Length: 393
Image (cartoon, rainbow, N blue to C red; front, side, top):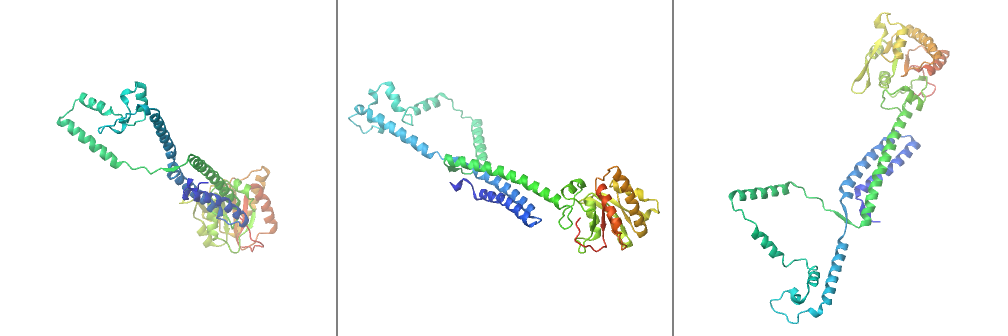
């Protein structure tokens, strides 16, 4: 095999896409979060290098026909020598000083067909200069000033075009079989990179959904339908916030908003309630704002049913800064969730009830909320309870 059918860049592109399945396998064995993304970057780099190799190297390969041309010239020389040998009897026995190299044959004694056959081997036509002279004598010469100016302009235009024109790269000469192998390998390389890129994107998407409901492994929240994420990885309806959380509680609420999910934050800390009652955004760069309303600011005009319905359709999120009001709201929520379960109604985006109160929720209430939340799409997050195991979102 001729290794020069590809450049170094081309072989590097092959090595890059061959590394992609190895990175996927390593990710499956060790669950390293960024290996699938590194594999995708390898695929993109392989495509860039393959395009460079194809455009700047493979496309320059041409078939080397110097051997064929030399064989043709040798055949012509042999044919001319054979014709000369066949006319030995017509060779002039007397040579004069003024005779040219071609005058050793007695052309005057040849008939017309023999003379044409002999002249076919000569590249230069001895009568060509006479015909050129005749053409020049037939044409009229324009010695006018306008003609000289036009000729000068044409010459300058040609020279300027030649200066602007870039010189093409020298071709890479190879045998016919090597050129065919280079074209096949180049097409195969580009096709395999496209396949690996498609697989790489699919692996990243699947990995994203598999990690979306895992508290420790989820990343870059997006407002995707909760049913998509829950289908790949079922969500825990009742969860306990870890003792060593990844982020602050306010940042957790912002993550809920970034996922397109609404929440009601129940706390007995006035400062935390004030900080939480702000505007959150579902997309980066402060796009798609959602207001977080403090129920206490509306002097009892905002009842529990209104809060439930607003959360159900994801219009707003809420803050409750009273333990008594929080217990009342949680009880009413479970009543409304029971009604929705009978009609098999389910929210489009998960609704989170964030319980940040020192008073623990009874185990019976937690169990009942878990059953109702599984059927309707509600989730309960306990923030101050010590977890028996590391909870996952």
